[in-house]
Length: 253
Image (cartoon, rainbow, N blue to C red; front, side, top):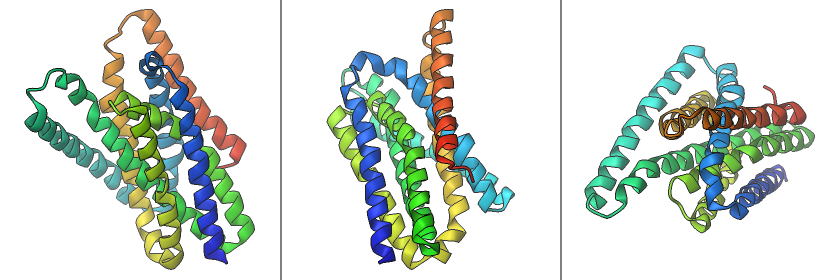
């Protein structure tokens, strides 16, 4: 019965997150560059307000810091590999340089989001193993926290060159990571508890790297004061949404 509750809670969370991402399907293509600033804010807000504090709260600080550092270096090498492969396979295609510039960010966000959803599933499983009430409260809080981040991730995928249909399909697949995490967490919770701080450090590294290395440089192409002010306000809005959801949902660790 407990396993059934875990699976249902993870599925419900995945469905709600996907519906939130579907909101971005109605966005006009011309809005995407502007809203990338908002995505940067949600990524940095989720990383520094939620993932990093939780990682340090559940693991040994030096180990978590090493995981974040290793994750950033690892994502740098992964992006280099993706860039090299794309250049090797499509270097002579017309217009490939624009696609080359953005594709790795989408891939990295998918990897990080899937791992994050997996960890959410493990956390939901751990809560339900304590009590159904705690499990439900935890599931609601996690879903509330994920919704604005999912919208931001969807915008990153669009910015990375994915079509709306493909980005939506990949978002659905990524959201199922919570179900896998919930089931595996139920059967092997103690083992996963030991891995959680390291996995969270890697998730934080993914969010930070994508925001700082892939998205922020694109904002510098519009250095005029009005554009800079608009970008700064949207980044702040993204951070504020994450902070507000944490307060409302009581999702502080």
